[in-house]
Length: 70
Image (cartoon, rainbow, N blue to C red):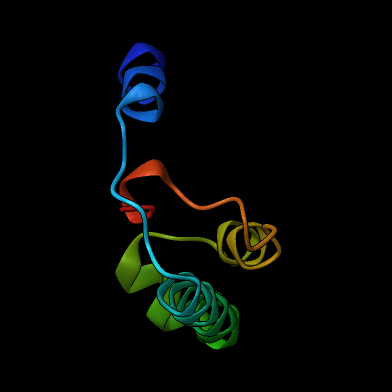
């Protein structure tokens, strides 16, 4: 798994405009805030604990999964 992630980072990515990058960052921020606001029942439906949700919500904006950074 780590090798796959490393190889994905080495692949050349098409350049994105600054506006596209900022919009994607804002969307990620909103999604993480929404995740933090879910109640325990909704989190359980997703297979997450409150701790999982808060950990994800508190990640820095630049710490996004590689597959989101298209």
